[in-house]
Image (cartoon, rainbow, N blue to C red; front, side):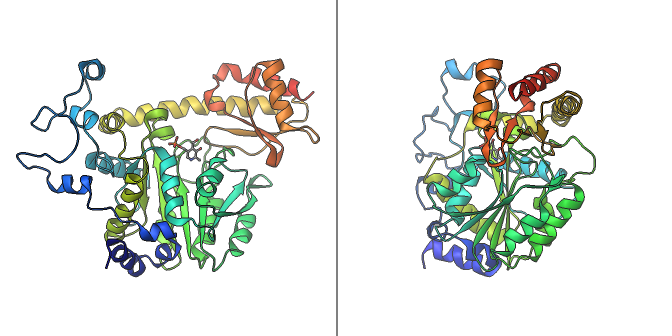
Length: 421
Ligand SMILES: Cc1ncc(COP(=O)(O)O)c(C=O)c1O
């Protein structure tokens, strides 16, 4: 039996929905007994002549001072030697501990986080692992546009959509109806809360309803919780933790596989650090099988995750000041958020109609009927020196208020209003 077949048998036994959703590629992959595996086995040997990296001859790195002198505080081995394909163990465990601490005491089973090149590689790996031309990916409209590339470009998956908003909130009924149509079909359900471009996180009540819908779904399906904007919440009464934990506690592995992709990009404001993580709501046997498969895809595409970034993030996670620093950034964003809410409500905005927003980085501002969002976007650039993103699906502009100073927000709204007059 091949190693991949052995892993598939484990998954079929321990995580039937996950196994049923594997793509052709997902079924074929298993981390090979190549250089990284052989070098891992030789760890601790006296004379280790496995990996092609230039060291001092005794296992320590030999970085050029021109590089190393710039980062004297970083752990040199982490920063300047190859990382394991799944990331450094200490970092993976420190991230896991932080995520548990944000889970409100969940004791649900979750695999050890695998480190990745940002969340994008997480979603891309899941697309490799679960998407084929006969897979449907369920997305709201609007959604983060890159999901279409990630699942469509190489895997050629199909897409099903439903309108994100209904009235003043998330379209739970539309979501439930769209999911019902996928009953019995292999599908990946993308859950991004707070959302991009929506800037919306479900209320606690909506979140409970979404979880109920998912738990009742017969599948086989994969629920992909994209937690890129985790923690950026500015209103009371919203979902209190990542939906991953609610699903991990309640989903039946015969019907629904649950996976969380998160990372330091927005959560720790480390945008170019390219450190993301992936973990499944599953037991140790599934952990071993899926980690082998995810490592294989990583090895066969982008290689191991960056060392300097892992060293930085590990040091940050060990810093007792980290959480208060994160909170102070969230407070800064909350100030910008409140200013935007206030200005959109108080200025004469010439018929602009904001969609509900309560979290994350963005607000969607609907344009008066008949106006083309790309035309207005260009007008804003040319006549008002202001950049926004057009969201034609709902005739709106996406405003990334996360990067606008609070005192600039009134002028931002003023220019938006002028552009549609
Ligand atoms: C919803 C969502 N997921 C994932 C990502 C990608 O994150 P990363 O930069 O870590 O690849 C983004 C980035 O904008 C995003 O908005």
